[in-house]
Structure formats: C-alpha cells, structure tokens
Image 1 (cartoon, rainbow, N blue to C red):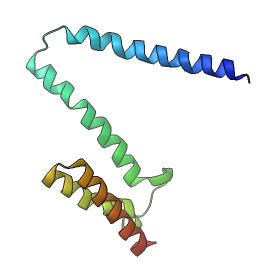
Image 2 (image 1 turned 45 degrees about the vertical axis):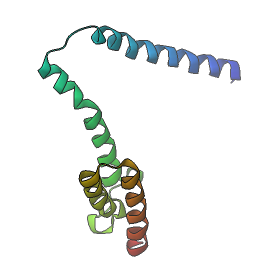
Image 3 (image 1 turned 135 degrees about the vertical axis):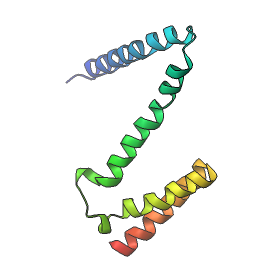
Image 4 (image 1 turned 180 degrees about the vertical axis):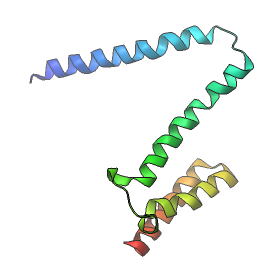
Length: 108
C-alpha cells in the first residue's frame, strides 16, 4: 500500500471527524440551552471516562481477573479516594501508579 494513499485516508478521516463534531458544537454554542439540558450535557464527559476506566479496571487486557487477584481493582479504590478527597490530578496519578505497583508486587 502506498504511503500517499494511507495519508490521504488519515487526512480524510480527520476532516470528516472534525466536521461531524464541530458543526453541532458551533450550532449549540450560539443557543441558550435550558438549565436542565445544560446540566445533562455536563455529565457526558464524566460518564465516558467512567465507562473507559471501569472497563480497564475490571477487564485488563480484555479478560476478567478474579477480584482478589486484580491489582488494578485494588489500586483503583485508594486512587478514587485520593481524587475524591483532594481533587488533584497529579496526586491521583502518582497514588494510582504507586498503589498499582505495590499491589502487583503483592498479588503477582
């Protein structure tokens, strides 16, 4: 496969993706949305992130691990607590990595 073809496909996909996302956002940005709809839309990023994280915690590498042998699950609990308590992304990331390494060493 020629590299020009691959780049053309990548650029075409990027433009289509941008157009599909930009047009509705540009349209909605000019409207005054009802408070209920605005509140509902504010939960979408959190919901998407939760779905991604929960899927990776419960099924790392696409396979189920028994809960008592899952270092991701054990590390997710204190990590969630740190974020809930201090709302620090950097602190949460560091705590998550450290707890994961500790639990992987204990369980692995």
